[in-house]
Amino acid sequence: MPEIRLTMTAEARTVLSDLLRLIAPAAARVAVRRARIPADDEDVTGYWTGALEAHASEEARLLASAFATAKGDPAVILLRNEAQALGFLRAISSVRLALRELVFNDIPDSRLEASEDLDDESLPAEKRHALACYACFGLLQQSLVAQLSPESMD
Amino acid sequence: MARPKIKPEVRTETSAKAERRWNVIVRNDPVNFMGYVVVAFVSVLRVSHESAKRLMRLIHEEGRATVWTGDRERAEMLALELQQWHLDARLEQDA
Image (tube, rainbow over all chains, first blue to last red; front, side, top):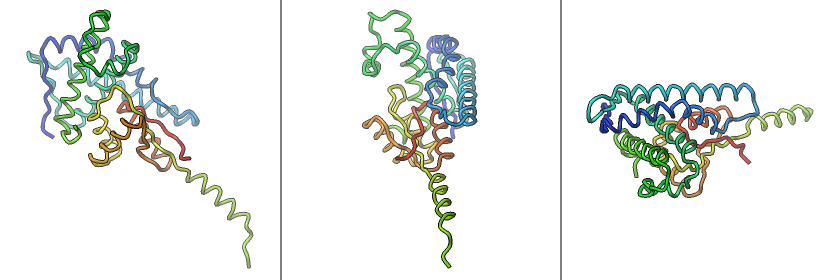
């Protein structure tokens, strides 16, 4: 797999990194909480929960490291192999789910899908900021899928 | 000479119980993009991109779909892996 580059402005890198510091620990908890874990076998439940926790923590580390090492303007995140790229994809999904659940769970899905509504000035500033980051992480994820697996795009 | 029927009947029942099939269900979610879900299915279920897209569209249109059916151990492993992709995956026993 050729090296994959994700490029963003230095300002975007700073804003997204700041948000990650706040949301990444919660993202791991959300990932475990929202999972439907079978409860009829204690051993399976324990293994399953542990596997999700370990995976979520690893994703948070990967994301933090990727943003921390993205220097310059524009800032470039380099993903050197498929495992890194797939891990980065999952990590972004985890962060978006955590934002959805923890910061703007009161906004209907239909409204989230209409990007022009995301900058609604009637929303509190913090929520608008989180929505903008949610959209940015979405763009990064789409860009990564398009580079990693163009045949997956419609 | 005819064999006693008790043991074979017990064995059959045990065998049927052991062979119960389990479905891995994935439900639609508003956060994950379609392309991302396709990548997840290709990676976890080892299906072609076309099959993964068909499953993804079914989930998008119907709200949920069975993405795999089989023995419980394998179903557990696949459901866990799909959850590690942050998809809304769960196990259900086949009716």
